[in-house]
Amino acid sequence: MFFFKLKLFFAACVVMTLFNYSSCKYSFKNASIPPEVKTIRVLYIENHARYVNPQLSPALTDRLKQKIISQTKLTLMTTDDAQYEIGGYVSSYEAVTSGISNQQTASNNLNVSVHVIFKNRMDEKKSKESDVTVSFPFSANITLTQAEAGLMDDIVKNVSDEIFNKIFSDW
View: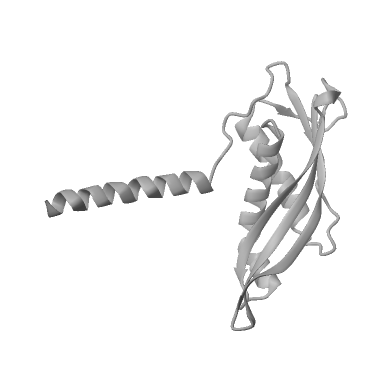
């Protein structure tokens, strides 16, 4: 009986782990793009935030292009005659206190917001603008510069994933 309960407990743990993993991390593998759309242009995502991380804009723009190439059949173009166009800018990049313990800062979040501009040149009514915000927790025991160094890969990946999902879903 003990082994049956142990197996049941183990199976429940596996199921819960898979459920938690799938609800926290997701990928938009099957972008819903009409078959007549063949081309896309990705503009440089400028940084208009008060605090500018000089690595963020080029890395974010490049990652978004790579994601589109790898997960859609769209062809990247650099000219104005692309059927879809993605642009935008980093509108906010700031560290905020997220937890206090014993009247001292215990944890912080680095909040990154991007204003996304999507143009559908085949149907202007489907052009949209929206904001994407992602928070990245970090310890209050390290500086923002140290946090950025450790978080940069996650920031670029997660923000570009959010932009991609926002554009290729029904908003």
